[in-house]
Length: 329
Ligand code: NAD
Image (tube, rainbow, N blue to C red):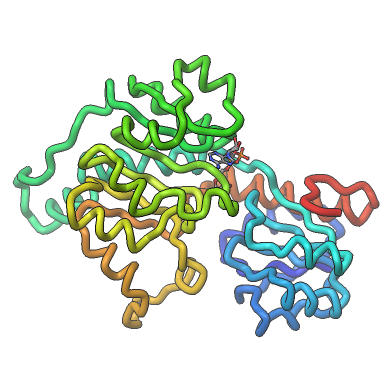
């Protein structure tokens, strides 16, 4: 069984090499992103292993299928980037890693909250420059603040547990309420009410046709002035240009993004010696109350090992005719 991993960074190669220790799988590592231009590299590979910014539209899937690929093994939980109808038509099986470490993503969301609130990014630079003043660094106690959790699945629940530990009041929105949140004392509300009441809002729902631009100019106008928004879900959950207007007016007081609508062309690459061509991202990066991380919330040793172990298991089980973690058969 030959499998090709696209978008493979050195940390992926290390975790897969660890997990594949005594496996019979023939793994090949490819740093390039999967696109129509690179899909031909997979010719002759039974399985293609893809990450979140790989392109899996109908044309790419057709190219993969014509080259003999029969399995798409996603190294992610989300599958919004896969044309499932095309995969089904082409007879491709799609499997995923439904959970690897909800803690990794939840803890990163909390890291963004703490850094933004206590302005650690500014303090870090200031003390390194020999400036030991405190002006502009005033934060607020998290204790007693109202936190809105949008999407209360595995990651949202892990996030809620941490925020409950800080003594925050929890509000939640999810079409399927989670009993664990109710046990933590969370109040489930409709989304507009949650947005009006929460001081901090954290997005943990999947990207679907219903959640695209869930946060937009209208919803931003309904926030408490100076509210904090954290997005570790998917970039297109928010209308990014609308964020810039809300930051300029002060309506949005803090913004932490780990995901960005147009991240596919940028994230996971070193572009530090080139002019940034994305004017929306460039503007966002000028605000002192914005922190952008490049889709790193998942990046813990535990999560990488779990992704590698489950993916290899998914491929092995599929090869043995006993597939698991199917998105489509
Ligand atoms: P999950 O399936 O356990 O939970 C998702 C929750 O969202 C479910 O409870 C579901 O009912 C809810 N939901 C569905 N539609 C909704 C809507 N319209 N409004 C509000 N809630 C809705 O998934 P998870 O493991 O908690 O992951 C959540 C998301 O986090 C993933 O879909 C993915 O996009 C994102 N994610 C990001 C990273 C990262 O590194 N930044 C890593 C993993 C996952």
